[in-house]
Image (cartoon, helix red, strand yellow):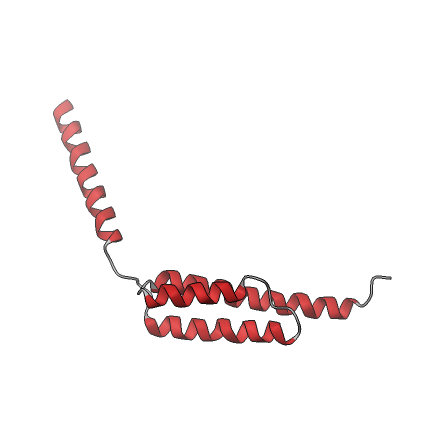
Amino acid sequence: MKIHSMMATVVLSAVLAAGCASTSNTQSSASEAEFTQAIAAAETSRQQAASVGGEWRDTGKLIEAARKAASEGKYDEALSLAEQARLEGMMGYEQAMGQQAAGPLF
């Protein structure tokens, strides 16, 4: 009985190790076309925020990092960075507009 348990553990460990190895060697599941669309949305969002003085400090850096990751074929990472940049652009725009509507504090 102990031998069967030990064999099951060894087999399970081998299966898990093979699964992890195959995951690390696979290409990105995101495509270049998805990235192209995402980076365009990020740029548009950044420009909208900049038009009202609401562009956040790191939005451009995120876009740059996304382009670099895409150039290396890391489309999953690139897509994630582009989405972060898009969201920062949206939030920067909303923040700037909210502050304009608030008026002076004193």
